[in-house]
Length: 115
Length: 384
Image (tube, rainbow over all chains, first blue to last red; front, top):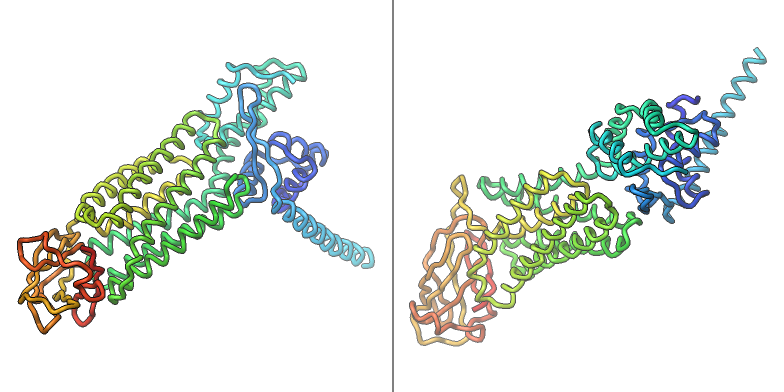
């Protein structure tokens, strides 16, 4: 399991990326997908996923569609045009961040090995 | 996948409500989430009871209430901003009218500015709310309300404090009120479709009803522009509007429905617009001014005196004698009026009691009645 502190800033990007790949997804489906794709290393809680989905919707990056599933209602989330642009931006930011972290860690590793 | 029965869903829903989840949108999402999880466990061969117990261990009640708390933190800060601005504007506005201090006019002006910025915020929010079908139209209309409300407030302030007359002030404010009614109807029509819960739908229906009542009130208010004879009923009309707004506002606060910010904005802005005509009594003696009304006739009249019949919105009807000062200028003796608002309906006659023999605009130069307050010359639109 990856520490919460490390995951915190990346959930928005992960959600946007998954919605871009699957067109529309609902909360439980998103949570399961993240769990499967990361082999259980990233486990979202209800308290982290739903507030982020509502915030993204409030910011106009995603929108929702309600559908009746038997006796209950399911809320599907979809990316808006603005959300697609934001997804690309966030992914390149995240890649840049990971490269930077890698360079620091690798450099540190080399220095330690040298010492 | 096996679907849960109505009874099983009812049990889960009951437990969600018992854990203190009040947000209806979140309630529906959590219900679906837990149902999916239970169904998935039942697929593995567990009974409903076992699957529900296992799901409750994964998502305990504490986790559900934490979700609501986090959601409030993420989402509500924006509505806190709108509600905060609205409450602040009500407080500043009431202070400016009830407590007559030197800075009262400025405080009143600030209250109008606060409400204008709420509409600017709505314009931005609607622009990015892609999930609303009419979001572009709503954004443009909110922007228009912002411009009209801001311009109306500025002109009104200049008129009350510096005598810079602008006959379009009230039409501007009333028109912004009308657009706001249209915005609220469109918005709640869209919001109504997104809710599945009967109680939420019912509340949105009530907001739509409030919007409809406001449509009638704004239509009646607008009719006073076209039928000046109705202007004498403005204090009664504004009294009704203020009372309706107060009742609606208390109701909206009590039900705590998500999406109520717009109806609150409609109620507060219309309250601000009409309250200036509400015949209230100030708690502290208002500032008193010595004023003289004067009019300049176009042709020399064969009369020594004219009579000005005024209906001063806050203090009722009065007939004042205007003495001839020179060939065409007729002026009243100085009289004391209180408060900063000097809007009024008036007509001029040659005889004191014969109110049918009214002088019309062809007799009054520049269609104006002038009013001296301290050293400032105010000009009132003459609408016999």
